[in-house]
Image (cartoon, rainbow, N blue to C red; front, side, top):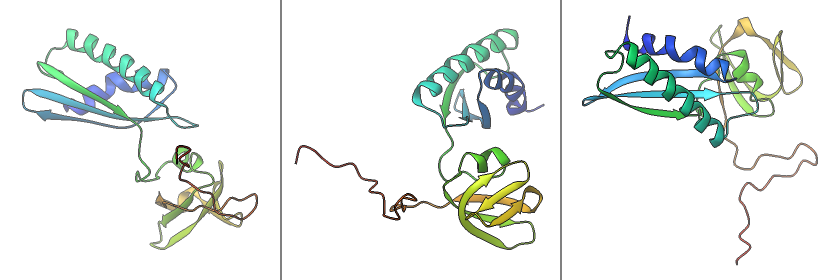
Length: 168
């Protein structure tokens, strides 16, 4: 059993019980230390307070596991907890659901691609631009397309993503 799978067995229930999804876990060596990196997410997105809460829970769980098995992470470890970035691949139905309203590019299992705005994601599959339904079985993976001037669906105008400087 690898170090990553042993750490995953310890941390997955801790993160899940706290109401988060453990999206990725890596354990790597950095000199005499181990580096434990977690990506966590939840419906509605994750805040810095959420990251701090997960960090405390995970740290306590790793410390307890290390007392039982000092070979788990070696003499010391560095813990890094963060949220997935916009560049993370969309591979699970929950990833698509969390990106309703966003422009995406989907790779299909037949080798073709589809692009559009996610208007719905339910048990049946994904709906792009309110017209094209893609069943989950047809989707391989996808990615969010970054939009700098996204149109406001209410009035068709571009939303200004830059905050104005009131001190000018």
